[in-house]
Length: 371
Image 1 (cartoon, one colour):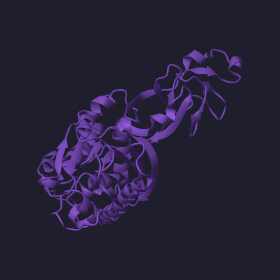
Image 2: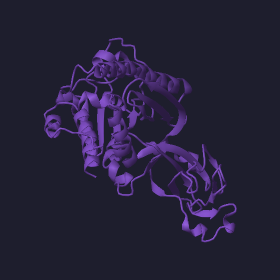
Image 3: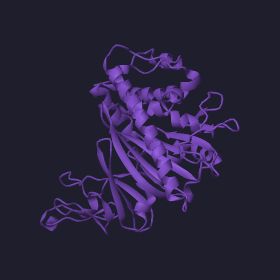
């Protein structure tokens, strides 16, 4: 069934209106997004240190599709649809190290290049050749320590999708190669994934909802800079200056070589945060579970030698801001679910990155309708 998109939606988005609020609760829209957006975009699946040696592998799910990424015999990253060509079981599960990819159901065995090596009892079958079978390959890309996959062979490369974002983040002091993973956490929020992205894409709410953030970083719209490319966006802001002699309680000691906060976004659901202080990065990505449920996953990276107490303080700061955001997005979800407001009105001086995001959502669904 084609998703109905009103002809005037593009003009409405350009004028500062939001996408329809029904899109945050409609199961049909959610299913269309899984196919039209998540199965056609770059999705984060893990870190490169999990795939250090030939034979290392990890599994994930992209939309409805199980995938596996391996370090192959040549030392390159390779990805495949993790569905056995025999009876559709997932070939491998979890993560680890293997010399081959053997299906746990009937032991059909594939090489690290995806080609079928053996199938028990296949020699008893006429006209069966293992050379006729190979797991479906998928695109794999890497940005810093982060490994991504894309199910669509027609999609732009990860490098093209990232565009100028890595350079812009590097200009702000982000050096991913100099960081090491420290901690991972996840939690579920009762809100549509788009509401979570929108909340990340603006700091209009920061003076009202984030007292510790506001004490630490500038939130004045003249200092909080916004920019966007085709598939990415970025916000940046300096460490806040307080009058000399004024005692202000900060959430942690921001002394360090990083003097700006950065908030990078890669379509559709991957974000990178850099806070002022020692070299650091926090990756946040949002996994749709249902029309009104989203899993938020956070991974924290710091420069080696960062004092453990400071690491803990910075992580706790991000978790506190995240808890404040959770209350906000769940409130938005309840309001959207009421059906009383058909669409919202953005203030584009502060919320134009949401406009950028909504244009990508609407464009992906419209393109899917035309396919």
